[in-house]
Length: 250
Image (cartoon, rainbow, N blue to C red; front, top):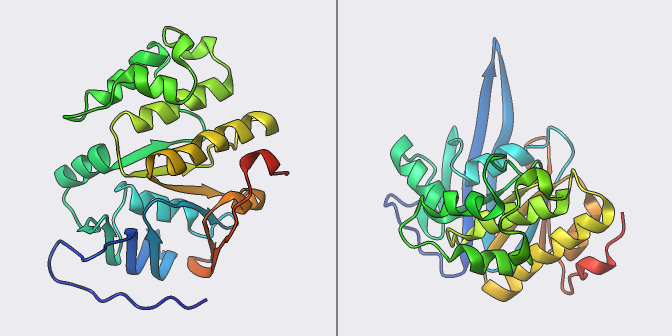
């Protein structure tokens, strides 16, 4: 599917009434010794606000590179990235850090919780990074863990740890949630539980969730599916009726 081209603008603002993310002819090249690796090549993409978006592709397709660019953990070699109307592709280090703290919530495959802190303390640690965080108890209730607030990660199951990680992502109240294989280290039933929580974030709070995975079955619950191959967008598909997470099978 061919996406319409997005005009490059000179200012740091872009008129995007409905788009959470715009990639405008974005490429990312890594120098590996004498070899150049094109991780992403001339990608143009528009992702609307308030959708559950799944990025699919095999290993080496550019999924992780795309996620890193959206999250401000890397910058494009060419092109521009807009998050909620603001240009973020070529910010300096200080501005990128502020962008990550205020506008992005991260959920990782292996949770990345601080083992010496309780569930609530892990969330409070993230809350301290922004001016107007949400209440830690409120986000714990949102993910169904209010009774596990004083438990350390070692006292929690994998699914509970991932729900703490989701609460940590929510506490800064970011408009965009980036999830990197969030069910990859979980069993089938626990994985579906995590996907239900993520789906509620979209439907209940109007946030945009971008989930990167190699598990094609998860695409059935997405509002929009982007398939990558060899650093290029292969297909963009909308699901008119996304499947409830409970009905997923893999």
